[in-house]
Image (cartoon, helix red, strand yellow):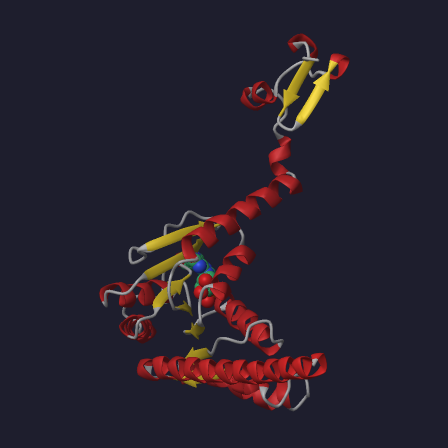
Length: 273
Ligand SMILES: C/C(=C\CNc1ncnc2c1ncn2[C@@H]1O[C@H](COP(=O)(O)O)[C@@H](O)[C@H]1O)CO
C-alpha cells in the first residue's frame, strides 16, 4: 500500500505520520534565525566547537613529516641573545629535516619560526586565542589558531617527535612540565625533551635534583628525562640520537615479539599433529 503524501513526513531516517508530523521541516528550522541564541554558550555546543578544533588541527597536521615543537618566552625580543639562540635552533632543526612547530606567537616562538623559515624548512604555528588581539608571527608558513589551550597542547604532543624548551615564563613552564609528565607516566615514549640555556635552566635542574629527588617525590631516573645544553647543534644531536635509540628499541621489541609468535605457532603446530 502506498502512503498518502499528506499524512506522512520523512525527516532523515525518521518517519512521522498523522498528528506526529511536526509543523515545520528540519530545513525550515535550520534556516530560521528567530528564537533564543543562548545555546551557543552552553557546554554541549562548546563540545562541538572543541571537536571542530581537533578536526582542524588533525586536518592541518596529520600529514606533516618529522617535527619538533619549540617552546619559549612570548616576551623576549630581537636583540636579546636568547632570540638569536632561538633562531639558530629553528635553523638547525630545519637543516636537519625537521619541521618546526611553535605557539605561533611573538618572542622566542617567532625566533624559532624565523630560523626555520629562512633555512627553507616548514615553519608551523599553533596560535592561541587570547583576551587581546594577536596575529600569528610573520614567519609562520602554516598556521592554525585554537580557542582551547588543551586542544592545542594535544597537537604539540601528537605531531612532534621532540620538545625543545627555550627560556620562558609560566607558559613555557606549563608546556615543559606537561611534556615531562607525559614521558614520566609513559603516556608518550617517543620523545626527548631538550632545555636550551644552562644559565637560565640550571637553577631549575639543580632544584629538581636537590629538592624533588632528595624528598623522594620523583624517581631517580626522572631528572634524566630532560637534557640541558647551550649548543643548537647539540640540540639536534640529542634529538637524532634519541630517535635512533628509539628506532633500535622498537626494532628489538618487534624481534622479540616475532620470536615469541614463532614459538607459539610452532607449539600450536606440534599440538595439532
Ligand atoms: C604575553 C604576550 C603574548 C602572548 N602570546 C602568546 N602567543 C602564543 N603562544 C603563547 C603566548 N603566550 C604564551 N604562549 C605559549 O606559552 C609559551 C610562552 O609563554 P611564556 O609565559 O611567555 O613563557 C609559548 O611556548 C606558547 O606556546 C606579549 O606579547
